[in-house]
Image (cartoon, rainbow, N blue to C red; front, side, top):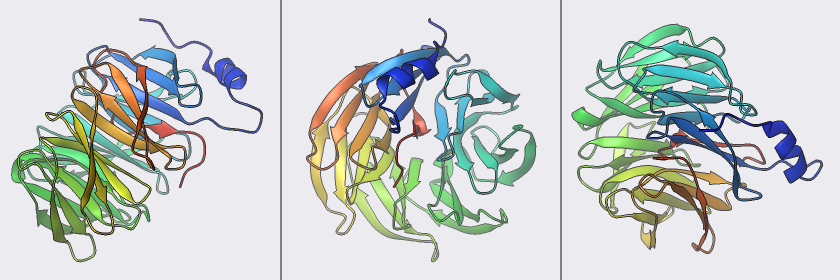
Amino acid sequence: MRRARDLALILSLAVPAGAAADMAYITNQNGDSLSVLDLDTRTEVSRVDLPGQPAGIAAGPDGRLYTVSPDSKTVRRLDPETGDALAEVRLDGGPTGIAYDTSRGQVFVSDWYNARLWALDAETLEVEAELETAAAPAGLALSPDGRWLAAAERDADRVTLWYAGTLEPHARISVGTRPYGLRFAPGGRLFVGNVGTNDLSVIEPEAGTVTATVPVGERPYGVAFAQGRAFVTNQYAGTISVIALDTLDTVATLNAGEYPEGVDDAENGAIIVVANWFDNSVSLIDAATLEVMEEIATGDGPRAFGEFILGGETP
């Protein structure tokens, strides 16, 4: 495993002056590493040792980068240029999902084993608060307007919403079976992937209600948004369901690599990036034409559970 190279030099050579390439940071759970992908050159420019079988990741619009290694129970804040750990903490439990609240300087981590979330200081990673959840909280998400924090509580078939500013609970919402990954759409609705019922629950946060249930492929894992569409990775099916946000109709089902998991948008919503766990690769999809553009090799077992794109323009 090679340690991080001088990524700053690589970027200065690869990217024209004044431009900023989008970078994808892919946690490789089996390989104990982090693959750093330049989406301009479509290459892996660095692979960083990251012990503890990393899976969860949160990349913020301010350039901060956080990872969760469940095996070693470690949360890290990383330097995105060198991969060095700038802060780290070991959490006694089952750290799984992660989300970063840029405006308030907090990081949230779900505890799979103890039905809670940790709220950490974004700089030091010191624990500031704990929030009670139902059984086996997994994916976490913050709304684009910064108002809501959401957690998928897998073994309770439920999602909980908190006011992000006060951390007071707002609603506890029954969804499909075994919700795992979730994300807020640009318009504010919350999309939840239910791995047990192979569908999405669409939630209106203010009302705290499910407004639609959308069938997708087998075992939906992650969801991202671009070009007025939702892109849902279906692990067992090896596909990506493409859902129109205005009608919630399925407009396409795309073939992906084996066991697609983490998914995010890049290049201001022009590209969808999908981590293929069993293929040790990511797929780049044109969000407008829905064509698979290219695949980039990664380390062993890419998961990228969360938001993993940094740099360039953001929507």
